Length: 421
Image: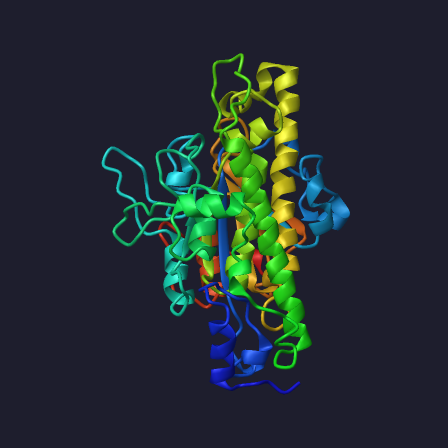
């Protein structure tokens, strides 16, 4: 298919929108054929406080198609050939069970004179996001339980914390609402005036200028953002509605944790699709997700699962909810198309970890890997690494395999050829 390369046509198209909104790549207005451009590389780092039950982990290493998935991992069944679970990892810098996120992406040793170092996502961002709107996308949560006293997973060159966006509303405003104030965003969403309406793009009037595949891509993109806005509207509606008082004296955030996480995932996929950034981190909530499941036990107390049979059952339900949300993210990345008609998933590497294995043990904790961004990455299996393999070895391997020229990262000792086929 021939491509329209007239810059003025593209400018006229965007000018008619009367608003500055990031759009997905359109073949019609491409300045060069995408086949000639270097393949995109994207990296997404996720961290969740607390670990999983001992029964969460496969007893055997090997392909999931042979060894199967445990009950806690069962929501990932449809992605079983696209995930790998690493075992026997050690975060060299972590000193406490519930503060691993402080050094999850840095590996800096904690102590009396603790000074953090640059996180691996920021090293990736320096090389992968040179021409993007945002050098990185740093997402966080108001809940610090299980993460330690940190603002996000990201740390700059000076070892200082990088504040993260704590809510889906903040992220929505950053990606889609130009210079509107938070109150203006709330008001527009509540009155159902979609940001897309301000674009005033009439598909019929431009159908003679734009390729059919691009019309389909725009429609898919618009519908996705509309769904995000409907989700935000629901969040805003219930945010000011008090929940019943907890019999335990705990007052969770006035937010549906599961819905909030899904909205964050939706917008991460859109941010990658529109190429606003190519590197993102998300320090995920735990207590609000638990509360949205109707479980009022404090998430820290839940990690003491041997206290009672009921608590162990609740911990098992939480394990499944965590992998259910992870499966949802992979669904979104696979369904979101890039300029070449390939899924964003195909150019992305996703890591999803927790700083604890089970209970309060910080040795041998797990890490999920997924994505098609590294072609020779071993997927679809449980890999038992040598005992106490530094987590920083994983980060070094992923950085190098994404073409980032780094010979050593933090306390790394070597690259992990075990991750590659």
